[in-house]
Image (cartoon, rainbow, N blue to C red):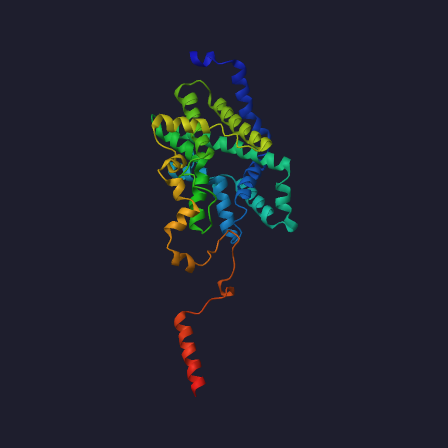
Length: 324
């Protein structure tokens, strides 16, 4: 209680207002904006409408889905699609409007600055709510445990990225950049940071109330979304914390470890690769086909060269006919 009294009352009042302010926005509108950001991230998944719907749903609500399955208590941690009809309806209508409105009206509206900024703010609000709710539920379901709220809170905010990385590879879509699990980025770091803040400041130290913890998480994520959208820069406030983590634990970063390997940079150059490849192999090598999410060409339309044995048989039959 003494530590909490040391905090300025204005700060606590501001955090309370930050937590209550999103309640003024209709819930379906928050879901629509949150869904729009997920749909835009996976707009290239157009080969199958069902794959597109599923991967966009995982991107939007995968963290809640993953943690709900782990916690196994629908009253404390429900699956979004089964908790409110407004979630499934709003998400599906947003997905349909983006991909299937005539004249490309969906992407055109989504590219407008107010719509884009509002969607990112909605995503930040719902993501903060998800992380905080899962931390609070974990403390209730697993009393006395520290790992449960930290792990489940982190997964609540990053599970969508982890699931879509795995699903993209299973569905045959190329991934842009390294996976989140292989090389953690802002998504995983920010989720872990907010889970740690909610658990330590609210449940361990008692400096903030549950509502004020939500206000803190919402403020951080909304501020990051607006700064990123307005400046066009990543504005990743978690990057220094990531570097500090690797410095303290002596665990090398994945990218840094690869770059620091002896001779790694020289071995990756085209000249070095050519030196390692036999000359005859380079001459016989055919140009590789680069696939993309939009690559749906029919293989039967590609001209194929007959095998050498078939060509030899054709030449022998031609010579036999000429001799006759």
